[in-house]
View 1 (cartoon, rainbow, N blue to C red):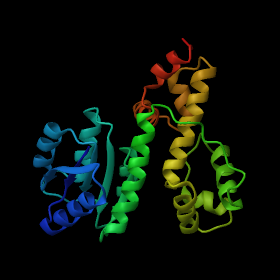
View 2: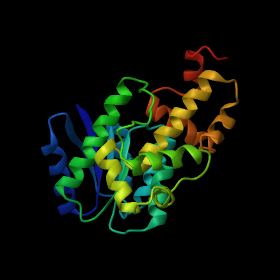
View 3: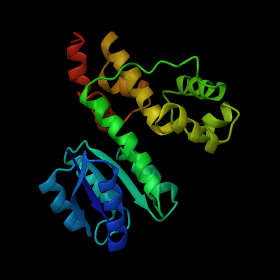
View 4: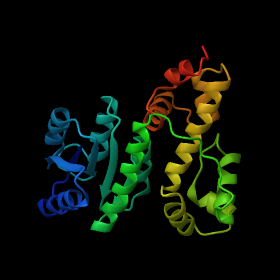
Amino acid sequence: MLRVMIIEDEPSAMDRFSGYVESYNDCLSVTARAYTSEEGMELFLREKPDIVFTDIRIPGENGLALADRFRKAGWEGELVIISGYDDFSYAQRAIKISAADYLLKPVFQEDFNLILDRLLTKIHEKSGLVQESLAPDPQWPEHIRRAQQYIDIHLEEEISLTDAAEYAFVSPSYLSSSFHKILGITFIEHVRRMRIDKARELLSTTGLPLKEIGERCGLPDPSYFHRSFKKITGVSPSHYRRDCGIL
């Protein structure tokens, strides 16, 4: 049974989100419901959830800052940010703390179901420790293959959905929906997995310092590189390298 925590200060929204989770399937249970950041931290430490949904605007510390504290405490569970504001700076901060997704209110049952589908897939992959390499599929549509080519070319740099869509000759919204439909994950998550896939290759074939490997994969922040690598593979970069026989 996976433990879910919801942090939301509106009682009606809390009841609705809890109902969405509980009706999804029997493998999920809402074990913690917090209405303030203080209550959220207390319940987080006590319940140790596998998945956290948090609104940004809550009494006390905002949800992004609270989630950042969870990460700094070593928590590697799945995080979903909920907001009533379509603010790009919020989305950027959500990415920095490894949020799996960013939901805009109003949030409906189908939104939660799509998110939970992806989260459970990720959790199941992590339970197998290391997933298979993400090789491009020749059956992918042309625009997906072009987007993949763009990612490969710019892997060491910051990669945006808008730039990849322009390279693939489609709109950002169409490319985003295509990734959901064809690959079953978001564009951002696919880029992150490609970065980690490249890191695995470098860790297993070179003696490059971890910091340089992170930079070559577009993850120059060592702590974020470590957290992202372990989140996807189940082991730390140094542990992975040792398992590959590279000292």
